[in-house]
Every structure is written in structure tokens, then in C-alpha cells.
Image (tube, rainbow, N blue to C red; front, top):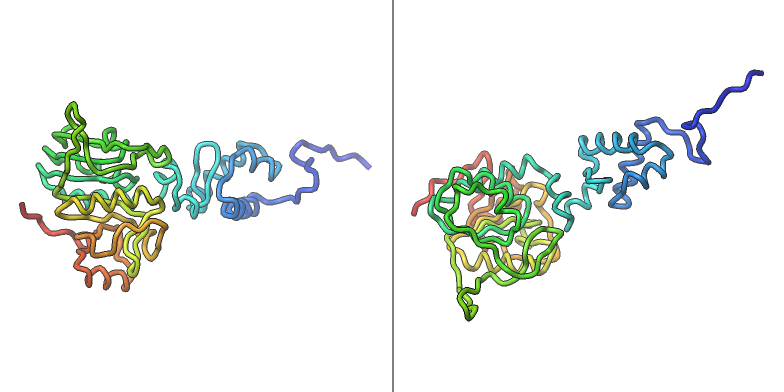
Length: 284
């Protein structure tokens, strides 16, 4: 009997053979289980080439099963927690652009605004390109690179400790000026605050206590407050409480929330702003 030659891809230890579709399904489940993987570790696990795993992860990312990152992937569930900015930029990008566009309609020329950290507020900054003479105070270190220079007159970054995972500062909502470092109290026309979760019973929350305290302070120092959150945040509660629903004047999102949240927003005097429910023209 003539011997059948073996090729490299046929030689595995005791790993079972898998069709590509089966491998990808198993890979999606594995990433979901462990939360984060590298291309190298997955290639070794399945006994295939790194290029093959890259293609698998790219396809799973396109299907929304995982979130592709540099050198690997994370589960979609892990990406919704306190993940790095590179991961969160991949989550709901279209929804965030919708929210950014809607929220920008609440900002008037010449107004003083505060913007907190987050990828949703980065989308907002991009949509402020047609505004003029804004004064902006933010803890978002990425805002200066995202916003058009023609949109603002003054742009201030809050001091404090830097959280590299979010590329933002956490600290007091105030500025120190002059040779004696005199603390200046500030107040703004509008605070635009992106949160990690919104609940009909528990209000607005985020994953980090320092961020939560800073967001709460921003809200207290503004005449009006707009909360920004995409539909994946509905019905959730995270570790750091920001405020109850009544702490905002507007809730800006990409789709109509569940009935219980809509009713709770109405009861607390919060105007819902969605693509089908545009905000009114604002008065000076």
C-alpha cells in the first residue's frame, strides 16, 4: 500500500480537527469565557497559523461576536466594562455618532460648557465643528485633538491624576490661577456627561468612583445637564453612582428606551432626545 504523505497542518498532538466555522464558533465562546486573548495564544490553542487566527478574529469582530484589539481581541461583554479607550472606541461607533450629533444641537454659540471623558463625548466634540466662541472645560485629554480649533475661544483641561485607561484626568472641578494658586470656582451653561449605565430605579452610574465624583460635581456646577448614553447602557447599574434621573435636564440616546425608563425620565422632568424626538430650539 502506498504511504500517504503527511503535511504540517495534519500533524497535531491530540487536538480534534475542526472545520473553520466550528473553530470560529468555539473561538467566540473561548474569548467570551476568558475575556481577553492574544493572537499568539489562540493560534497555539487551535494549532493553526497566526494569519488564520487574525482572519478569524477579524470576521468575528465584523459579526459583533468579539472586539478586535491590537494583537488580539476582547469579549464584547468585557469591552462594555472599564476597558481601555482603544477597546471602547470600537463599541457602538454609529450610535455614538448619532448621540454626538444630537447633543451638539443643545450647544449654542458663545456658551460655556463642560464635557467629561469618554468615547461618546469624543463623538460630540467632532460634531461641534460648526459652533463658534465656545468656552470648554473638560477632563478628556483627547478633546483638544478631536475638536475643531474654530469652535472654541478658550479650552481648559482640569488638573488631577491621569487615568491612562481612559486618557482623562480625575480630580477637582476647579482651576488654580495666579502666583498664589488661588482656586477659582467655575459655573457653566451646560454640562454634557457620558455615563456607563442608566436605570429607571438607580439613575446614572459609571464604573469608577473618582470619575463618578467628578461627573457629579460637573453636573452641580451647570445650569443645564445633558446625559449621553447609547442603548447598550439601558437597564444597567455600575459601581459608582453619579446621580438620580432628576439630576439631568436632557437624556440623549440613539433609540427610544424601554417603557419603564421612558416613564421614569418623564416623571423626573428629563427631556428625552433621540433621532425621532429632536430637541427644541434653545433660548438664550
